[in-house]
Image (cartoon, rainbow, N blue to C red):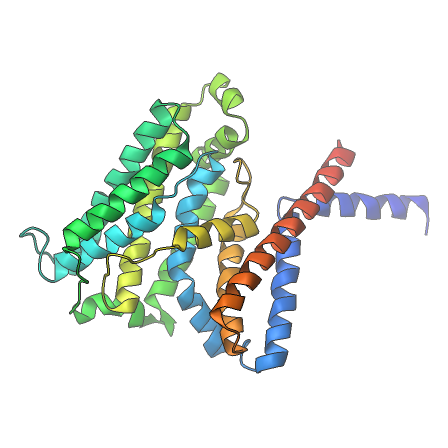
Length: 338
């Protein structure tokens, strides 16, 4: 092999390792290895029917992961997504059943009103975070508690039941054999990928998350962008809550409790930097998929819920380790190209 061939091979490898998608290799390897292990133990894991079940299972916290990713990429945080999720489902359930303080609507209008009302939570979070120096973690921890209280007040501490068939069809209905809720999940991720990867707005989100001061000095309206990411997070959380209500068949005040932790895990596993400025929509999807696969696979192997928590935490650490390792390899390849 001559020196030119060696140089071309090295150039190709550097180009491959310098790609923004290279960091996902570790997660993909983890998904493949885990799938093969569970398949060898259960024999059902990789069946089309089970894959469809996994996708249905990840709809709610997959969309919540998208919701959380926008503030994270922008260098902030939002813990209130799970309470907003519960609020969205409760509001929509009330609007199509008993009515919300006298207001009763059809399904389509109920979804629109619920999402818009939940966006008020994003407005409050956005104003406080963008206009003050209070840590976003503390701000959204507070609003999480406030919103959860609002859910209990609005629902009068009772579950919203007797949902109409049209509402439940959001989960049970299919298009081309695929659940409506799964199509919604795919649509949300597709739009997220388009916004982050192909628009100036997406580039501004990354820029602010990567270096707030530099973004400000370059003329980006950093406060407006940060404000908007919280509204997006609230709107997506409301949508997740509506789909959760449709799947369960009722809206309970305690719905989505603990889902923020799962969303954080999915984002971390998917390569979203918790300090901002780095991450891909496909990575968030793979992270959410991994979380769903862990639960589903362990259920098939009859592993208890307590051990599932242990395994989920361990796999998250392993996945983040792989992401950081592949990130270092990628950075070295980029440095060599320069």
